[in-house]
Image 1 (tube, rainbow, N blue to C red):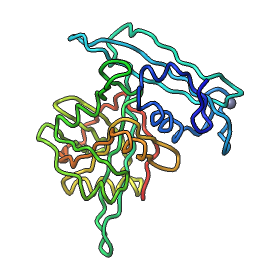
Image 2 (image 1 turned 180 degrees about the vertical axis):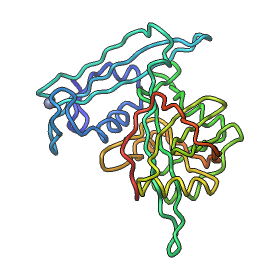
Image 3 (image 1 turned 120 degrees about the vertical axis):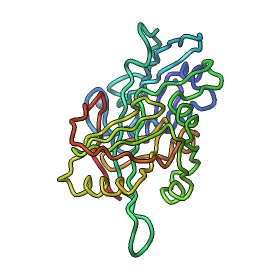
Image 4 (image 1 turned 90 degrees about the vertical axis):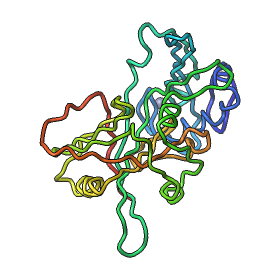
Length: 267
Ligand SMILES: [Zn+2]
């Protein structure tokens, strides 16, 4: 079996990932902290194994779509593997968004606090020919609505280069702290913030000033310690945009739909 760094993987993965295989493996490993079998953390240099669950589906026009759901193990707990299955229903149904809110301190004295909403879809969904050029569904959807590709994972570069997105994108903020990102009428991501949490309160106050910086794409890593953007930047799947905020005046309860939420982070 092939090994990259200290990770054993199934050679058939290359059929699907092509020349992105090594970077894909590194992006998965970069955010893996615990063994998916025994639950213990990975020590430095530990021999690891990557197993990938691939689901194939077709959209109405017959384009092949694939979702990649990786799991990382101690090599002693599990052998590397690859399983391919056919989607039984609409492939989008099993996707969930995962995200976090961050506040970036920008500038020197009299710092501006920039509210950031970072999210991705799990598992990641791509379209195209296995082994050929694969296109991320999430990245292309966002690029089509005015988001820009980010080539650096530096927050400074990201903030400097973020441009306002198209009029089809909006982030709504409700009085109860519920935030929802809509793109072209579709709910892409939602989080429930807590107005009594100091970090959340700063985020909400910043958002009310008019815009949030949305960081999204495939291969984003959400860990206990922060947000990992390096792999997404290297793989060309990192997109950003300044999204206008719509403040909902009332305190209407906003349903919290299908999102997992990582712990909020400040930096
Ligand atoms: Zn283990």
